[in-house]
Image 1 (cartoon, helix red, strand yellow):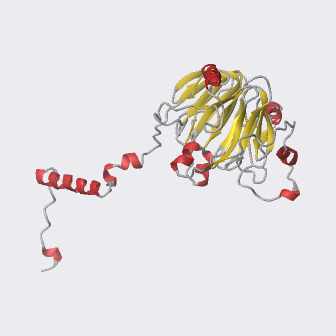
Image 2: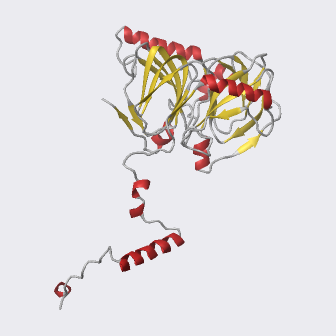
Image 3: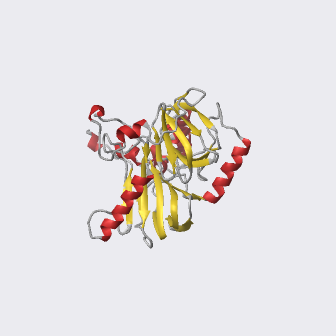
Length: 367
């Protein structure tokens, strides 16, 4: 008799009490040795689209700044806490001071004549100045002035401290990849000198003198670097580039805008043409009066801050108005759109470079 001559076995009765008892025993034994069956978890492990735990959220600058100022009356800046920085925690991530699962945004406040001691860490950081001046951030001993509209970089493992040489306080937006570094167990931190090493207040830092000419690379410093060697991207250059894009488009020059009425620049590494920081993309966007952007979704998460003007942001179909200084968290795969009123300038940073390098980034644009 061959195998084909045997009658087919009766299919198991999956609903029988005996079968269910054996199945429950299997699940208990799997759990005891740390195993989880895919057939019970596929929806959570492999969803059809991203299901972020972070939620879209807007913080009002009119509420953030007074709280930061109050903290200066009660909390000194010094060794240990290091910075008077207050993170913007996403309501969907309770217990974590994270703005998105990979990005950390905070308001940092430095009072008159205060200085924040030097330290360094594996996390990359930047500072974007909404308003004011009088602070110099000293990066690896090079004092860099901070002024309205400027983007200042502190790539990972660069020593940095801050000094306010003015008689007025100053606050700015901090952005770091703290959550991403924490989730991947890559965090390192080291104290530097108690005092800021260089108390000079030069108009132009050494790195700007060497790298500050747009499109000009010093031959003696040729060679790709992972992060930008330029620590300051000045508003005067950013503003001029955005203005020119809109002017050229109005003159009929094609290929100057992201979409009608929408100009944007990306802050890049002059040695590679890639992003200025390895884990975070930084950009400035300008919407002409009355402009409405297309609705988009991307698997990257982002944070936006209104630099000037006003308008509306659409987050998964929900509209919220935007005013000067407001900060918005946009989790992965959130439908996102903007509308300007009399004009709108926004700074944004995202985790897109990470997912581009891993070939994971996806974007969808509404018709």
